[in-house]
Image 1 (tube, rainbow, N blue to C red):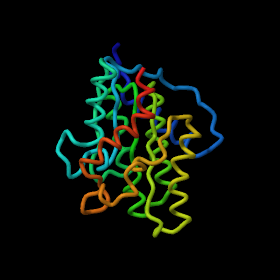
Image 2: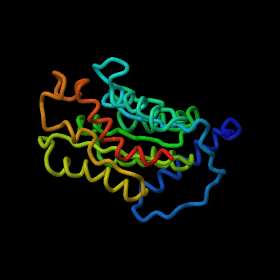
Image 3: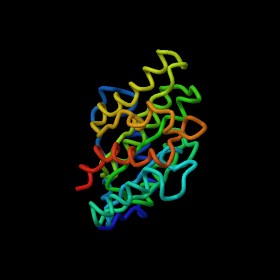
Image 4: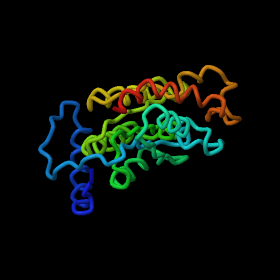
Length: 225
Protein backbone atom coordinates (compact mmCIF):
# COMPACT_ATOMS: atom_id res chain seq x y z
CA UNK A 1 0.00 0.00 0.00
CA UNK A 2 1.13 3.51 -0.77
CA UNK A 3 0.63 6.56 1.43
CA UNK A 4 0.50 9.35 -1.14
CA UNK A 5 1.51 11.87 1.55
CA UNK A 6 3.57 14.15 -0.65
CA UNK A 7 0.55 15.70 -2.34
CA UNK A 8 -1.10 16.89 0.84
CA UNK A 9 1.52 16.95 3.59
CA UNK A 10 0.88 20.60 4.40
CA UNK A 11 -2.89 20.15 4.52
CA UNK A 12 -2.45 17.06 6.68
CA UNK A 13 -0.37 19.06 9.17
CA UNK A 14 -3.01 21.79 9.30
CA UNK A 15 -5.91 19.39 9.67
CA UNK A 16 -4.29 17.43 12.46
CA UNK A 17 -3.37 20.59 14.32
CA UNK A 18 -6.87 21.83 14.79
CA UNK A 19 -8.48 18.40 15.10
CA UNK A 20 -6.24 17.27 17.96
CA UNK A 21 -6.58 20.62 19.68
CA UNK A 22 -10.37 20.48 19.56
CA UNK A 23 -10.36 17.00 21.05
CA UNK A 24 -7.92 18.01 23.76
CA UNK A 25 -9.87 21.05 24.88
CA UNK A 26 -13.10 19.29 25.65
CA UNK A 27 -13.83 15.96 27.28
CA UNK A 28 -17.14 16.03 25.42
CA UNK A 29 -15.72 16.76 22.00
CA UNK A 30 -17.45 15.05 19.09
CA UNK A 31 -15.66 13.78 15.98
CA UNK A 32 -15.30 16.58 13.43
CA UNK A 33 -15.56 16.14 9.65
CA UNK A 34 -12.16 15.40 8.13
CA UNK A 35 -11.05 18.30 5.92
CA UNK A 36 -8.74 15.97 3.95
CA UNK A 37 -8.97 12.21 3.37
CA UNK A 38 -7.10 10.30 6.09
CA UNK A 39 -3.99 8.47 4.88
CA UNK A 40 -3.49 4.72 5.02
CA UNK A 41 -0.72 2.92 6.96
CA UNK A 42 2.17 1.75 4.83
CA UNK A 43 3.65 -1.61 3.91
CA UNK A 44 5.35 -3.27 5.76
CA UNK A 45 3.19 -2.58 8.82
CA UNK A 46 5.24 -0.57 11.28
CA UNK A 47 5.26 0.20 14.99
CA UNK A 48 6.46 3.76 15.65
CA UNK A 49 7.74 4.40 19.19
CA UNK A 50 7.77 8.03 20.31
CA UNK A 51 9.44 8.20 23.70
CA UNK A 52 12.11 9.72 25.91
CA UNK A 53 15.31 8.27 27.40
CA UNK A 54 13.41 5.33 28.89
CA UNK A 55 12.65 4.19 25.34
CA UNK A 56 15.82 5.54 23.72
CA UNK A 57 17.91 3.23 25.91
CA UNK A 58 19.86 5.78 27.90
CA UNK A 59 23.07 4.29 29.31
CA UNK A 60 22.60 1.02 27.41
CA UNK A 61 24.06 -0.61 24.32
CA UNK A 62 22.00 -0.23 21.16
CA UNK A 63 20.44 -3.70 21.46
CA UNK A 64 19.68 -3.70 25.20
CA UNK A 65 16.70 -1.37 25.61
CA UNK A 66 13.10 -2.53 25.79
CA UNK A 67 12.38 -1.15 22.32
CA UNK A 68 15.09 -3.11 20.45
CA UNK A 69 14.19 -6.14 22.54
CA UNK A 70 10.60 -5.65 21.42
CA UNK A 71 11.76 -5.33 17.80
CA UNK A 72 13.49 -8.70 18.13
CA UNK A 73 10.32 -10.23 19.56
CA UNK A 74 8.25 -8.73 16.77
CA UNK A 75 10.61 -10.25 14.21
CA UNK A 76 10.08 -13.67 15.81
CA UNK A 77 6.39 -13.58 16.62
CA UNK A 78 4.93 -11.12 14.10
CA UNK A 79 7.00 -11.65 10.94
CA UNK A 80 6.40 -8.94 8.36
CA UNK A 81 6.13 -6.19 10.97
CA UNK A 82 8.93 -3.77 11.85
CA UNK A 83 9.66 -1.39 14.73
CA UNK A 84 10.99 2.16 14.28
CA UNK A 85 12.29 3.82 17.44
CA UNK A 86 11.99 7.61 17.19
CA UNK A 87 12.64 8.16 20.91
CA UNK A 88 15.01 10.90 22.08
CA UNK A 89 16.65 11.21 25.48
CA UNK A 90 15.39 14.30 27.29
CA UNK A 91 12.28 14.58 25.12
CA UNK A 92 9.22 16.32 26.56
CA UNK A 93 5.63 16.06 25.39
CA UNK A 94 6.13 19.37 23.57
CA UNK A 95 9.04 17.92 21.63
CA UNK A 96 7.00 14.86 20.71
CA UNK A 97 4.07 17.00 19.63
CA UNK A 98 6.36 19.05 17.38
CA UNK A 99 7.79 15.92 15.74
CA UNK A 100 4.79 13.63 15.45
CA UNK A 101 3.49 14.74 12.06
CA UNK A 102 6.92 14.48 10.47
CA UNK A 103 7.50 11.02 11.94
CA UNK A 104 4.10 9.79 10.81
CA UNK A 105 4.75 11.13 7.31
CA UNK A 106 8.14 9.38 7.30
CA UNK A 107 7.22 6.05 8.86
CA UNK A 108 3.56 5.54 7.87
CA UNK A 109 2.87 3.54 11.04
CA UNK A 110 0.12 1.04 11.68
CA UNK A 111 0.70 1.38 15.44
CA UNK A 112 2.02 4.38 17.38
CA UNK A 113 3.40 3.89 20.91
CA UNK A 114 3.56 7.15 22.90
CA UNK A 115 5.82 7.07 25.97
CA UNK A 116 6.29 10.70 26.95
CA UNK A 117 5.60 12.98 29.87
CA UNK A 118 8.18 11.87 32.43
CA UNK A 119 10.41 14.85 31.69
CA UNK A 120 7.42 17.18 31.88
CA UNK A 121 6.67 15.86 35.35
CA UNK A 122 10.25 15.97 36.60
CA UNK A 123 10.45 19.61 35.52
CA UNK A 124 7.08 20.48 37.04
CA UNK A 125 5.69 21.69 33.71
CA UNK A 126 1.97 22.57 33.54
CA UNK A 127 -0.22 19.51 33.24
CA UNK A 128 -2.59 21.30 30.88
CA UNK A 129 0.29 21.68 28.42
CA UNK A 130 1.22 18.02 28.71
CA UNK A 131 -2.38 17.02 28.15
CA UNK A 132 -2.64 19.18 25.05
CA UNK A 133 0.65 17.86 23.63
CA UNK A 134 -0.20 14.21 24.20
CA UNK A 135 -3.68 14.79 22.79
CA UNK A 136 -2.13 16.18 19.62
CA UNK A 137 0.09 13.12 19.28
CA UNK A 138 -2.79 10.73 19.79
CA UNK A 139 -4.92 12.68 17.33
CA UNK A 140 -2.22 12.56 14.68
CA UNK A 141 -1.79 8.82 15.09
CA UNK A 142 -5.50 8.14 14.88
CA UNK A 143 -6.02 10.46 11.93
CA UNK A 144 -3.27 8.59 10.09
CA UNK A 145 -5.21 5.36 10.58
CA UNK A 146 -2.85 3.96 13.23
CA UNK A 147 -3.74 2.22 16.45
CA UNK A 148 -2.32 4.07 19.46
CA UNK A 149 -0.85 2.70 22.66
CA UNK A 150 -0.44 5.34 25.36
CA UNK A 151 2.19 4.43 27.97
CA UNK A 152 1.82 6.24 31.27
CA UNK A 153 4.34 7.24 33.92
CA UNK A 154 4.36 8.21 37.59
CA UNK A 155 6.43 10.81 39.39
CA UNK A 156 7.79 10.92 42.97
CA UNK A 157 5.39 12.07 45.71
CA UNK A 158 7.61 15.03 46.64
CA UNK A 159 5.92 17.02 43.86
CA UNK A 160 2.83 17.19 46.05
CA UNK A 161 -0.38 15.16 45.92
CA UNK A 162 -2.26 17.53 43.62
CA UNK A 163 0.40 17.52 40.91
CA UNK A 164 1.31 13.85 41.36
CA UNK A 165 -2.28 12.60 41.14
CA UNK A 166 -3.07 15.01 38.33
CA UNK A 167 -0.08 13.74 36.40
CA UNK A 168 -1.29 10.13 36.54
CA UNK A 169 -4.87 11.17 35.82
CA UNK A 170 -3.81 12.99 32.63
CA UNK A 171 -2.86 9.70 30.97
CA UNK A 172 -5.96 7.89 32.16
CA UNK A 173 -8.28 10.68 31.00
CA UNK A 174 -6.67 10.90 27.57
CA UNK A 175 -6.88 7.16 27.06
CA UNK A 176 -10.59 7.26 27.88
CA UNK A 177 -11.25 10.35 25.77
CA UNK A 178 -9.58 8.98 22.66
CA UNK A 179 -10.47 5.31 23.28
CA UNK A 180 -6.88 4.15 22.91
CA UNK A 181 -5.04 1.22 24.47
CA UNK A 182 -3.38 2.19 27.72
CA UNK A 183 -0.50 0.93 29.86
CA UNK A 184 -0.69 2.92 33.11
CA UNK A 185 2.95 2.71 34.26
CA UNK A 186 5.91 1.67 32.12
CA UNK A 187 8.20 0.93 35.06
CA UNK A 188 5.68 -1.05 37.11
CA UNK A 189 7.54 -4.40 37.02
CA UNK A 190 10.89 -2.89 38.10
CA UNK A 191 10.11 0.26 40.09
CA UNK A 192 10.08 -1.31 43.56
CA UNK A 193 13.69 -2.52 43.47
CA UNK A 194 16.50 0.05 43.49
CA UNK A 195 18.87 -2.58 42.09
CA UNK A 196 16.98 -2.38 38.78
CA UNK A 197 18.21 1.17 38.16
CA UNK A 198 21.38 2.87 37.07
CA UNK A 199 23.24 5.20 39.42
CA UNK A 200 20.89 8.08 38.56
CA UNK A 201 17.95 6.10 40.04
CA UNK A 202 15.90 7.04 36.97
CA UNK A 203 16.90 4.72 34.14
CA UNK A 204 16.58 0.92 34.37
CA UNK A 205 19.68 -1.20 33.84
CA UNK A 206 20.06 -3.67 30.98
CA UNK A 207 18.99 -6.62 33.14
CA UNK A 208 15.63 -4.92 33.81
CA UNK A 209 14.80 -4.26 30.16
CA UNK A 210 13.30 -7.69 29.34
CA UNK A 211 10.74 -7.14 32.10
CA UNK A 212 9.77 -3.81 30.50
CA UNK A 213 9.55 -5.47 27.09
CA UNK A 214 7.20 -8.13 28.43
CA UNK A 215 5.16 -5.54 30.32
CA UNK A 216 4.60 -3.44 27.19
CA UNK A 217 3.98 -6.51 25.09
CA UNK A 218 0.84 -7.34 27.06
CA UNK A 219 -0.78 -4.29 25.44
CA UNK A 220 1.24 -4.03 22.24
CA UNK A 221 1.16 -7.63 21.06
CA UNK A 222 -2.62 -7.78 20.48
CA UNK A 223 -2.42 -4.64 18.32
CA UNK A 224 -0.13 -6.29 15.78
CA UNK A 225 -2.73 -8.05 13.67
